[in-house]
Length: 298
Length: 114
Image: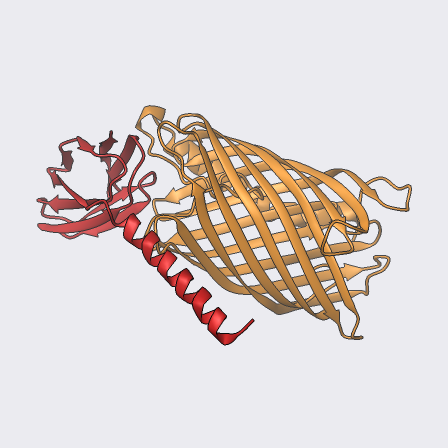
């Protein structure tokens, strides 16, 4: 299967979700003055907003992230979070769940061919609202810590023992009341991996994102985002191996008061691999990535 | 470091924590009430003091359940028909905080904190 066919397979469910979302959005279109406040956590795609939910609220979430395209061959991988979220206070949100992964790899340099589906690990996330938005302050900031354990390597699909700590600052700014929002993330993600050959690898990612989202109906938000990520072969900022810039569209649709989805697509438009003259960084990052998240509140 | 010095440090930390907790409870909780009848909040705009924890009593006079919800207050509570619900709210900064009935999109009100 060619890279273009692989891309089409990855895009199909996302496009279907977007079309469904837009149809629902048009059906619900109404007067902006009557719109309620919106939860910002999910409206920026891969960028996470500051929202932490409502005290006492519980959610079940399925979030799939697909990664498509390496330098050569066929590369399709995904990781799905089966997640329970709850908000025990007006400042804290806690999430935890299991991870599932799929890998479909053939003819990619440096990776073994593989087709597999696996239960790949577990994670938890702790979110603290450090600065809340009010009618007099449009900025909100949340600090998030997400420890993750994996038995399957995210990129190669090999059996490993991996521990990752994703640390983010999620900020958003209400530019136009209930209509236009800007989101910003700052990310630091160190990880340590023990391979089957007893090799220990340390690496980290550092970077940030900016996103802009416009509410076009009471239940539909569309937008775009840009990410800049740097990769290091160490937990601190030494042994820089490359970076990448990804951009793409985002969509959020609330189907009912308790059920909603978010979708996003990012394409790498710039990247460098240290020590090679090629364009794009397809060693540590992928050509494209997609996100589809379905949330049910109860 | 000796065991005695560790105990002393723990004692100091616990005392400091107790002080912080006591200070955070200096402001008594302010009680406010909103009624819900004929699918509307009454009053539609509710005054409240800033920087004080609030006990918001929601009295549902209607013959069906309602869900008091507010994204900016970060609370939600289902109140059964002909009954009352209590919602504890953190000390708020001055501003306007919208609330609504999640079961009835037209029912909405504002907590005006000054």
